[in-house]
Image (cartoon, rainbow, N blue to C red; front, side):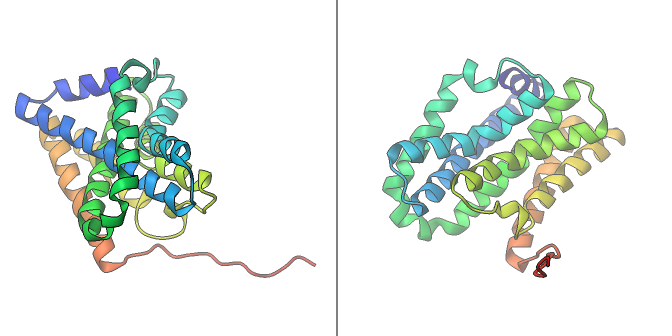
Length: 222
């Protein structure tokens, strides 16, 4: 993953590289914090908090790389990512009491992470020349798998399957990215456009409380 991320960043000028790297670091830190909060709601100990933080932040990229055969796994070559996400998770145990004051900022950072992960996942799959549907799935795996693992380990139905437009935002970003790419849009402009529109879509969905139709089936088999 790390090699592909490095290639991803190298396609941009220095200011863009710095910005995207910052967004990536913010993304994994924010996801680690969300994992720590979920662990706290389940009254886990410090070890549990660290594990859930790690899985939430780096699990999506790990699953994607295993599925695509992209080895070695990024965090095994860059242990600083591990230190960062575990530190962010443990710091959350101290900062949790103040989190309600930062809810809006936290949601904004989480939206940035979702979009950034989705774009990085698409980029990795494209470098392996996978078909379009696989590229989209790789982007979505990167964007949402960490949250799914977090909720499963915390014994909850994953949020992406029961409320909010979260996976849908990842799908939108991936399709938009590929669409603009096929139209010949410059890579830098493509990434920027997808990032802005994807972030705006996620925040608007939260503000308007948009939901997908739900399916409820209560009848028992006799």
